[in-house]
Image 1 (tube, rainbow over the protein chains, first blue to last red):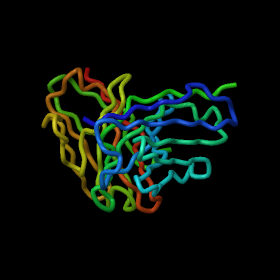
Image 2: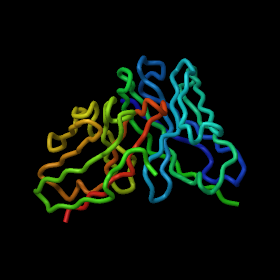
Image 3: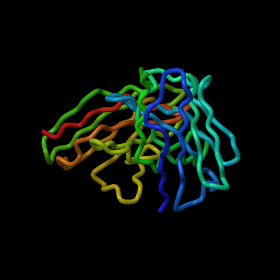
Image 4: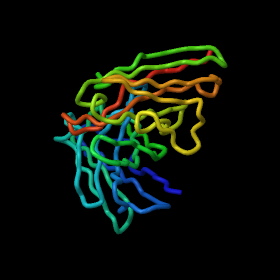
Amino acid sequence: QLQLQESGPGLQKPSETLSLTCTVSGGSITRGNYFWAWIRQAPGKGLEWIGSIYYTGSTYYNPSLKSRVTISVDTSNSHFSLDLTSVTAADTALYYCARHYNRRTGDDTFDIWGRGTMVTVSS
Amino acid sequence: QSVLTQPPSVSAAPGQRVTMSCSGSNSNIGNNYVSWYQQLPGAAPKLLIYDNDKRPSGIPDRFSGSKSGTSATLGITGLQTGDEADYYCGTWDSSLSAGVFGGGTKLTVL
């Protein structure tokens, strides 16, 4: 059974770069039609999609975060990563990684989620 | 402000039926498939409905989804106290080339 596990620092200072990793276990990161996504949830708020990556390295990013986001994938070690630059208090959130199933154009589902990792931005 | 619009809250008594809506536009719901996610308190979201109206294995048939035009609806019958959660709709927005979610609806089972 496929599982996702987020890891990374829980505390960041303003202006730093937030870096998180999601390790995929129990399944292949190179399976066709599956992207790998980062989604966040600010305290008391809703879900915000950050971006998704295919095992080939092809990416999609949230336009509102695109200038600060890089998602990369390491197929050899079965993990993918998020870098978010110049963080502020507004980036304080629970960060989830998720499997993004794209059956066909316009048919996208986040079908498996990690448990999430809390990141606080504070000086 | 979310791209998809959901009512902030709905409530109903145990055993009753409840529906919650998700409104969008032609660039998202109108031309793409909708998913629904359940987030129990303190837990990660869980896929409840995909492809507008399909249930993943293990999801009881008390949960149903539908779509008409640029709106989608999640229905839950035989409400249980364990259904109290936040429910999110999600889809792909073709104009933004981005995944989008609604702001979430908090279900209270009175």
